[in-house]
Image (cartoon, rainbow, N blue to C red; front, side):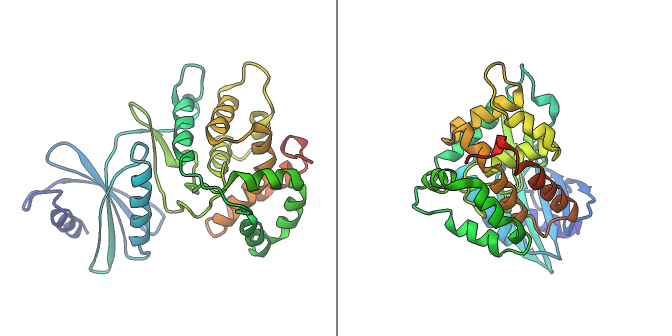
Length: 294
């Protein structure tokens, strides 16, 4: 595998022929191998390789994301299919994982995340009844059908009308803590495999909050509750991001059950643990007046 990767990097013009770059191979329980390869100039590239799943679609989505979010994502450098392996190469970047320490009064990270949402909002497109197909898909999908009608009724006509006026906005689709990192001057967003799979404005903000709250309803509820003064860092992020997205805080809170159901649909085959966490949150939050608008 090392020799194959080196040949691919030579083919892409990333390493001179005959050189022996340093490989750092990560072992995972997934269907792919991840390797950081250090280049002669001191930089590095990230190589993802799999003989079990196709990576060409992921490469194309990464290219589309980079065209729109070059400031916030890593550059995809090439894709090669060789000897039964799909190999995807991206530029390496030095960053630290996003964690709770980045959400305090002195941190600039919440403002940087709000900046990402402001950048993303430029992709919004108006469309009458744009989200009617989503509601129908949720009613028909086996993972969400049992909840879709109840949540549709919970939202109420005023919320559905406000949602319709939002139009569509391509979402990252898995905008969670594990897929964000902090660089010296900003943030970087990884894993764009689901980019555009949902067009529901505000979904990415909700999934980020879910992951930061570790799927605990009480914590999420405290961040969603309207703050009149001195909001904490997470509540302030909600306010700033909603402003960037053109969403009122009231509308965002009322759409949380729909966000949860949409995320469940996107991740239905991902893991049983995630599915159960989302179902528990739906049960606990849907009756809550904090996330309902009659």
